[in-house]
Length: 452
Picture 1: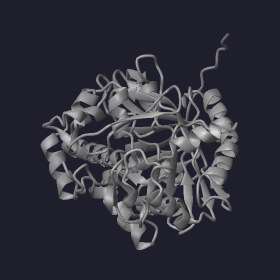
Picture 2: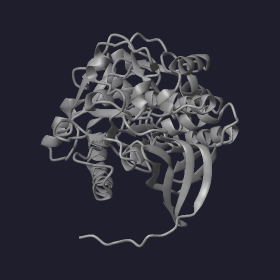
Picture 3: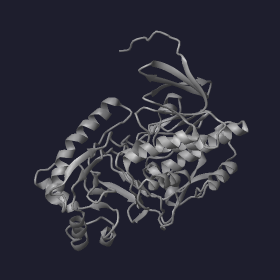
Picture 4: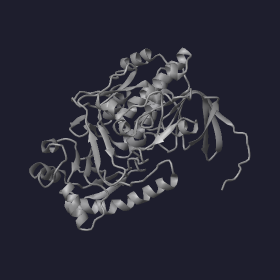
């Protein structure tokens, strides 16, 4: 059943040079990179009332370091960490065998730093708006339609960068998009939550002194002796809890230390079958994840040392999505490209996170590691047929398996910087983003500290 909406004139709210849609890790970096040299009018749209996206839900930033322990993500992503560290709101890049490295950040401070960066660069930020349509002239994007409590409005732009995570702009612009594996199965999302009152030394001692009981999948017990850490294991404890009647949706206990000495973030809710582009599915996910928290918290209190007197202090403002739409671009990055560490002449990002696939069915995960860092080419940001549009973040042009490695925030931040820089260079040179001088782009990224 359908209805016909009457035709109407839509007022133009703004006309800009570069419009970034989505204020998460890739979007903030894209907007800053586009605006940092001045001379262009840059606007950033965000549907929530703050910037930062997944930077604000209690996750650490993974894989600033590569498989060999050297830092491979720098540039604006590192400048963002530097700003947080000035506030005492970010830890060191600690090596981690499973995740290459983890960098603990304060999620509230991340919101402030993101907003401060936009103010510093002169980016015009507009929150509480959704992109609900795209303005095109043939195959060229000319702007977007937004929806808010003001109704529908148009924002015209010479270049649009889609950093929505779900590829919302690209999808509405007619770019070919794909979802999930061969069966359409997508990696399930997680609702993060924080517990306080954890007796951290008790947890450390159990893992170090009794690795046969409190097993970690691949991480050596000594990794937990000091500093920040992530646990990935205790499979036998989960099986015991499940046998005792608790409904635990994952196979591994994933716990992440916070900046405070008694603070743990719990990464153990999981809602299979979620499609974040469908509001009914996403709603079911949010409600289900909150119900799962009850048994997960009971499991931690009863079976994991240090949690007996811990309490739930904070719940992330939204469920973190691992996978939804990806575009088909000028090049589709594959897992073979990652695992073979393929060289690309147009590489704009160096990444090191493994192919980390949270299974669409069940509660387990598969991880495939590389010997060294791998390159991501500029062409994954460029849609195959639509002009004046770039797509950065986890919705860039990658296969299901490749995206499982490139979806982490450090890589998305670097992709955003590359997109924002490319959009600005294209305007300066009077060419489409698809025709940008990649050597010039690479040189500017290198000059700003990036590793390629």
